[in-house]
Figure 1 (cartoon, rainbow, N blue to C red):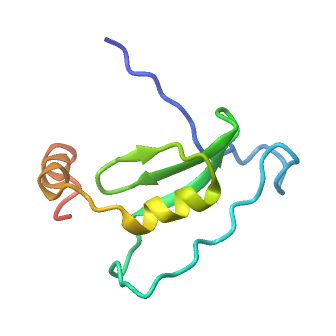
Figure 2 (figure 1 turned 120 degrees about the horizontal axis):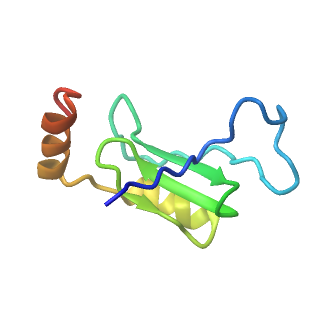
Length: 97
């Protein structure tokens, strides 16, 4: 089975600013809850899908929300499966999660 690679970020060779088809992603509003020193969830616009994508860099959990607000809500409420994160760290050699 071959893996399919999907690039979520525009290549640097593209125009510097967001185009009319790729809206800028405003920063996520901060909640009162602390996530730690590094927020593992990124919300980005995917030109290929024509939609926002929220992806956790720790557990690779990904969601294609209907709206940007839904993406930010998911990012704030997301909890990694710690056993899965530990397994990913062991397999990829990333170290302690």
